[in-house]
Structures are given as C-alpha cells and as structure tokens.
Image 1 (tube, rainbow, N blue to C red):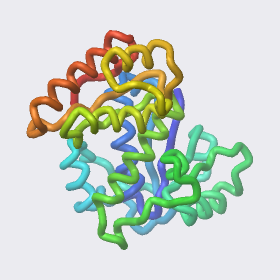
Image 2: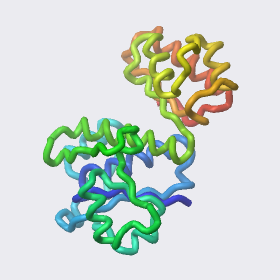
Image 3: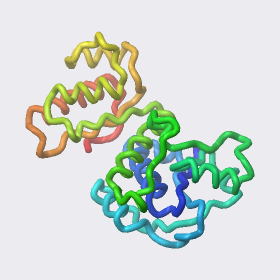
Image 4: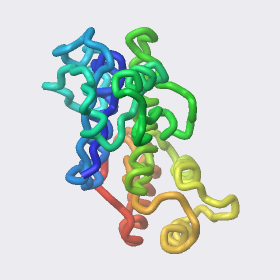
Length: 236
C-alpha cells in the first residue's frame, strides 16, 4: 500500500481538501484499497479543529464530506511511515525538512509540480479568501498525482456545452497529436493503438443542464472508452 501525507500550515484548508479530493478520485477509480491518504499541519495552531467552514462548504458543494476530520501536527516518525509527503507551498516544505532533519529518501514534494506547474504554490485561502480557486488548484494537482501514481487521466466534461469542447478536453488532457481526427472512430483508434497520455480514464459527464446534444454525445464517448477497455468508475 502506498501511503501519502498532504501537509499545509494548519491542516484546516488546503491539506484536508487534497486528502478528500484524492480519496474520492481513488474511490471512483476502484483504487482506494491500494492507497492510504492523510493530511497534517506543520504548526500546532489549529490542533483538534475541524476543516475551516468556508473550505468545508466548497468541498460539500462538490459532493465531498469532510466530517470528522480534525487537524493534527506532523510527527518526526511520519517521514518513515509515509511514502510521499506533499507540501502546499515552499514554507511547508522548509518546515518539513526542519522537523524531519532533511529529506534523505527524497520523499518531499511540492504539490503543484503534479499539476505541471513546477515551482508554483497552492495559495493559502485563509489569506486570499478565494476558496474556490484553492479547490480548483488542488483538484488539478490531485488529477496530476493520480496520473503519476496509476496512469489514470480524468476527463472533465462537466463544463462542456457542445461537441467541439468535448473533443478539446480530450485533446488537451490526452495530449493528442495535431493530426488526430475528431470522431468516434478516430477516438477508438487512439485508445487502442495511437500514442496518447493515459492508460485508464475517469470521465466526469456534462451537467444535467448542458445542451442535450452534448450530453448524448458524451455518452457515446463514454461507450467508446468502455469498448476500448480503458474506462474506470461510473458516470458523475
């Protein structure tokens, strides 16, 4: 089992959000039994406190229940207990190195590196007050981490309102070659033989209020992934 610890300053906003987002993705993919996901703080300022209400509300709006989660501080033995310890910003990483006495086994990571934004940070919404932005950045990094861990790509059709935007999402996330066509036949050829990013896929389907054409076509896309044997999870 791979053990991952997300770390931020207080363990009431960013790191618990990462914990619950990644847990949900792994559960949808049927991989939750292979991973242990937790979170902790570098400070003792919020010990025992629940997830901060504004972040809790954002998580709830995305269908995530973080009830029962309370803040704890990282311990020196966490370095031995976990395979990856992921900080939200450089200050978190500096604090972890201080507490752990360095990083001899190269277990410490900057979270936004998994989002393809090396050197960037998850801004602390305690100060920015932009909890939706924090959620979006954390979700993107979680998707990148899921790909790094298990080769799973998340295709988010939830904001797609027509067929071109469905293909744009696939082309971007799967890193299609420029010459690849955009049809269901071409998609099946990509999934079964042409180079692309991703071994298995989770699909977030269009919203219920999306145009009918987009919703119906997304179902045909989903069937194509299923027929190719690379679909994970259920419609969401």
